Amino acid sequence: MSEISVTQKRGFAEQCRRLVDAPVFNQVIIALISVNAVVVGLETSTWVLERFSSTLHGINQLILLAFMVEAAIKIAAHGNRPWRYFANGWNCFDFSIIVLSLIPAAGPMATLARLVRVLRVLRLVSAFPELRLLVDTLLRSLPSMFHISLLMGIIFYIYGVAGYFLFHEIDPTHWRSLPIALLSLFRIVTFEDWTDIMYTAMESMPYSWIYFLSFVVMGAFVMINLFIGVVLNNLEEAKLRRLDELAMPPSQTEILRELRATQESLARLQKRLGDMGDEKGSES
Picture 1: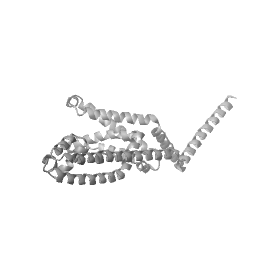
Picture 2: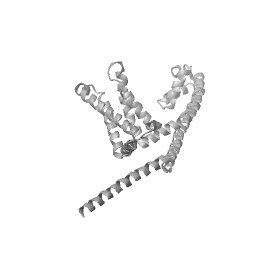
Picture 3: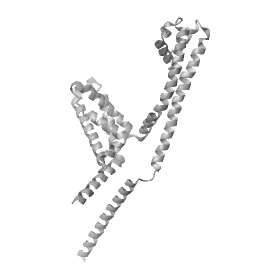
Picture 4: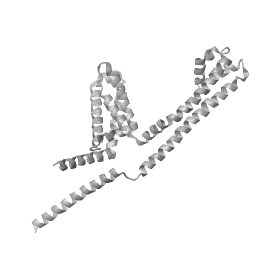
């Protein structure tokens, strides 16, 4: 009896696994996330809320229920090892969104509940492998970006102090203190009317253009290209890792799973052949 129950559990886990791997399953989840995004957008309209509040609430509840069922199916697909579901970081992210979505949308937690509904739209990232690859690339780029940001901070500090000593009397609006000087440098590096600041300084110091142009080259062109280079490099590495994962030989668990499925198929085929033989024998 225990062997039958174990076989049934394995069969159920295999069915859940096939359902999760089916392209239609992922397409349905993407459609639900898209509907959720549209509903969240409609909730920002007072006119829509006054007329369709209950309808939108019902759709939100149905979408949440569908996400809970999705998580249950994915957990069941791991059979006797449901904790493997949480070994995937994207599964943990999806599960966290579902848990947070259970916060009641009334009382002091209402605002948080609405914000969580907005976060559900982020599940589109986990639904598309290409978007997951980009997010993984950004996360892997953070350490390198930190060092580039540190270098940029040093350059900002040097130019900020120099700008204060050079221009705080000429243009106190933009250089009267170190914090204001750093804000002005940020304005320059984002090209937000930075020439107005330069021309104001050049009225009293004609050669001050050297200061501004050198900072634009260092702060904007060089640093931004360093950021882009780091991201592109990590994106290429992430693609290579993805190809290596796809080219990896099947694990022992996968081989045993396929072998078990083949044995079950052969058993069903043998049973059919036996039934066909019995029918022919009875007819003769």
